[in-house]
Length: 494
Image 1 (tube, rainbow, N blue to C red):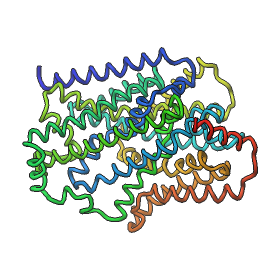
Image 2 (cartoon, rainbow, N blue to C red):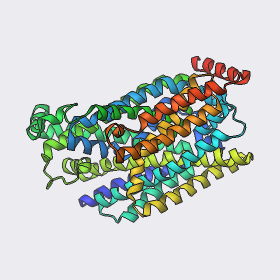
Image 3 (tube, helix red, strand yellow):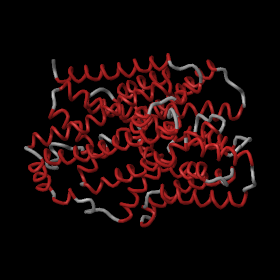
Image 4 (cartoon, rainbow, N blue to C red):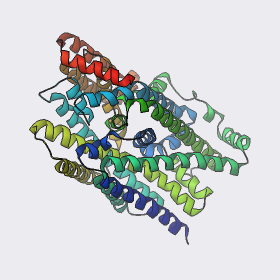
């Protein structure tokens, strides 16, 4: 068999397995709670790996290795910031979010949690947050589909449109059929594929180079500063990279994994698994980049695009079938993020906008079908946007992390840890935080200087300050809210 045929076989096996898991998930889904949150019965392993895979996207196997290959270890600060942020998310958010969402009238989405937590009977918070999720994630999903089309175009020379439609079609199929359980279990497979690929590839590469000493000598022969964490960096750059960790507190597609844990006490085990996965994955991504430096010597004729360093090394070092499965790990990263965002966007459309506005109840069967219609509707719009392969859509990927982090992060923390948060405070903070992200990004493009600081940090701080000040001004004692808060604390402690 030819190299191309072996790699096609690997892709068919992978894509077929994802679809099979989707149909398995369909048999486990009875009502909307199952479809959107898996009935709150995810084991720690599934929750941890699903959260990691949903977070990573193609950035982990292409973006990060490409940045480190081009500029050195100074680009690794973002991985450090994300790992710290994820640890705190599991430590201080996960247990209480799991208990409080159940205490607050069994909230199954982040918007419904905000509304139920603050007894927002008019549905203002659910509508605001639902709209933000719907708009941001539609473009976010589209950008993932663009990445999928580009992957097939560069790896298999398939026309971009066909590659995009293939990725979108398979991802939508298993998400549409199997819901949250299928998305979570496919994420487990995809997460294991990613970490295995990122561990095995650099190890084999180092062995081929003659060992760690020879590999390090080859890297330093290209540029000794590539192994420095500070060379070429600035204070604003390092602070901006570390600030990425704040985004975890506001990412709906990650927070929903914490809500789906089987119990609050399982958060500790999930944290250990999730952080171990992240550390191994980030170290593997960095090591892959450095092995690429040693192999390709920054020779543009041998590696024109740094972001393809993982792809080219896989094809160079392994049998075509193994290389095909390593390439499938990239596809896994892309698809895991798309599917997670599809299910969260569908939940915002059905649970928070439709039910939040109409107040109409849905039977279990109708709830599941409403969720599927939501997935399909969002996917169709996202695919339509992806056909144009717009750079604007791709640019929104990084921007969306800041928008969600600054818009929702402080609200999540205050809702879980501060009794006196009010509806007015939460709404004001979210609006100011999300708006400042837009403004700060524009000022960074036009003025530079301090405005080159990652917009997530000033947006997060502004949200936090405004929410606290407005809440102090509008707070009125509410025994029911206080009782729920105390109950959530008790459930968290077990």
